[in-house]
Amino acid sequence: MNSSDCVFPQLFRGAELKRFHAERTARRRENLRHGEFKCLGCGQAVFPDVGSVSLNEQVGRATQAYAICCDCGGTVIKLLGATESDKVKDCLATNTSLARIDEGKEQAPACIGKDSRSQDSRWFTINDRIVHDWQAYARRYNSKTVQAHLISIRDFERFLEGRSFEKVTPKDAGAYRDHLVKLRTLPKEKGGLSNSTVRHRASHLAAFFTWLRGQSGYRRLSTSIPDYFALPRSASARPLAVEKRAFPSMEEAWRMVELMPSQKVAQRRDRAMVSFAFVCGFRAGALTSLRFKHLDLEQQTVVQDASEMRAKNDKSYRATWFPRTYEFRDVFLGWVQELTHLGFQQQDAVFPEIKDLGPRFPGASAVTPLATSRALQAAFARASEPLGAHYSPHSARHALKALGARICRTHEERKAWSMNLGHSDEQITERHYGKMSPARSGKIIEALNSTVAFTEDEREMILDFHEGRFVRGTDEYRIARKLAEKREQARGDDDVIE
Image (cartoon, rainbow, N blue to C red):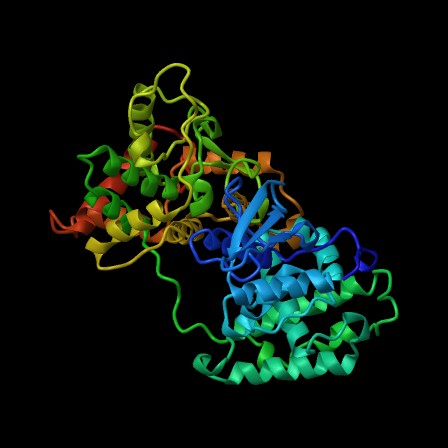
């Protein structure tokens, strides 16, 4: 292709660029192809520019070829066999690239996605520039969201067999919608897709073409195209959940923590991680990327800072430690004290790698948090095993939601509880009571922390305890006694709320 035919800036697919560099690296350890030279200067196997090649032919000996490395500019030399020598001469005579000699062995390009259809050897470039423009627009989204949308866009492009998006009609969108509905009915081993995948692909493409119609060169597209991606109700309806997601009660959660070993420092770290999950309600990514500067031990709050933590939807907020988590807090505060004695500072991770769990010295670089949440997931799995269950870190959020349902009595309290978990899903409060500020939410959670609020079941247990209806030594007896003790301690305050 002539340089005048190029459109700048030139675009290269990331997956294809990665494959190219991987292939170049692998070429260092393999036999050279015909027309390829090994540069001893930069260590690369290269196809030099044909204009730099010169041949030294000697009777009865292999032909010596000299050229200039296209990467570093150094001189490269290669002994050519008869066949390769003839091919190089042909390239010199016709002024064609040496890479053409061996192009039949070129590997198929890479594509996007995990499923078999995404790894199709066919790929198309006609829409790459507008897809690149969409990626610039989509930077507002999480990288995983962008990747999911790209998979949908490229799948639709393959369905069209590489036709330009500017020529798409409502009929094309409707045909792809019917294609998705059909895939929904097929088993996975035959290329079928789940209900969730079908719904997402349809919505991704509707959103993409809504955006596309506003771009130069695409404004003549039919306004009804996004509507044609809409699935029929039978396909878009969510299936009935077979069973609810498993999560422990707060009593079971504390039993999990109690049974966790704590002899080694790594075990105490895992125990503290599990405990703090039930104190702050953070998701696994945010919890494992926590630093000391995010904690306010005096106010008993913790900040999810999306600029420094792995936060869902890049959301930042301040959470007050949840009520009824006092035993969990003691475990976590013990861990904080242990790290403080080791010299950990504000910039250091609260839950570091095992190799970093040692004394800190002045001037040392900050301890980085865990790179992934795998350690927390493994800790939850080990902690829940003695209970005959398998709880994930996210189960702590479900347990806290269930706790809030038990002790929150007003719409405002439920709204505050929801905001303290990092989202606003109390729709009734949204409609009838308007927006709640984070400051107001924090005050309500603090009030729930400072008062003793008992549920109906708990009040009945306290009454049964005083009437001697529990057998000493049983779990029910211990729980009821603890509730009764809390009530007696609170009775010294005339403002006890029950």
